Image (cartoon, rainbow, N blue to C red):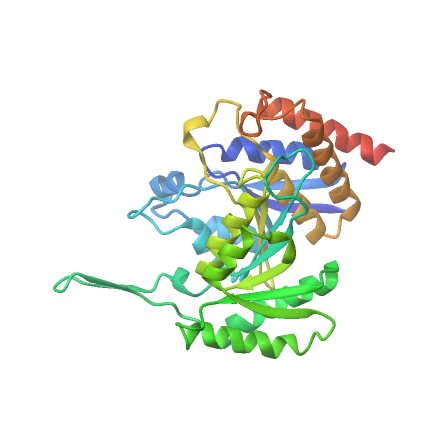
Amino acid sequence: MSYRITLLPGDGIGPEVIDAAVQVLEATGIDFGWDRCDKVGTAALKEYGTPLPDYILEAIKRDRVALKGPITTPVGEGFKSVNVQLRQKLDLYANVRPCKSIPGVDTPFKDVNLVIFRENTEGLYSGIENYDERLEIADSIARISRTGSYRIIHFAFEYARKHGYRKVTLVHKANILKLTSGMFLNIGREVAEEYPELTFNDRIIDNMCMQLVQRPQEYECIVTTNLFGDILSDLAAGLVGGLGIVPGANIGDDYAVFEAVHGSAPDIAGQNKANPTAVIRSGVMMLRHLEENRAADAIRDALYETLAEGKYLTADLGGSATTTEYTAVVADRVKKHLEA
């Protein structure tokens, strides 16, 4: 099989970690055609007058699958997040973030195996805001729909069934947000009836945060709304080693974008110091989406071996290897696994 994949390197360390992921993915021997779109975010704004030009959306719609590096979002001003725009314009309603303990990555928590499912297109992230200049009051609307709630909850249950998980936990704030979170919770209870073999429970968001830093091993699949999911997914990443090693996917009915979930780290850009693990693991998720499971297993095993060995780690993981050194070791091990 051959695949044409839209490639969005992003900015900061994005091009470096994307190039590393491409090298590891190509080590599988799969025929990839990379549809590279370099102008996105600030670079695109200068040339096209928008951070997300139409040619990128057209490429993803044509290829149906994309691999993306980090893209800087201005804080408090400037253009709207490209990540949010991609999710909304392509209706990528399911944000999927696996957070699993990895051999060789030392953390206070062992045997964590969580997947966070975050609704990706509505809630406070819809960006529906108003500002009353006279009263100096800003409003932000947390819009929740039955359709949006049902499909992300159903997605989480289907994922749990397919991948052998036993429990789904829905996270909400229905004790206070009785209409928005209340509807989300009620729909979760309805969907749970369709999956009698799975255990369903719910947690209030603040309690969920506390429990995840006390006993994360008790949880498996966690589904929630957009803002709560944004917070919980980073918290869960911290349990297993941080954003530098955790993959992410944005999936809809028609398109899928796989991405590194960490920032663009402009302070180390171009210095060959970046850790490409997160985007490589996002590439593994992409391979599973394409049903290339043998190649996905080979990359997973190569990564785990390299991290467990501890000889070729980047600085953020306590080592001194460069991005290119680490990538070369992983790619070589991928080839050996597939030749065995």
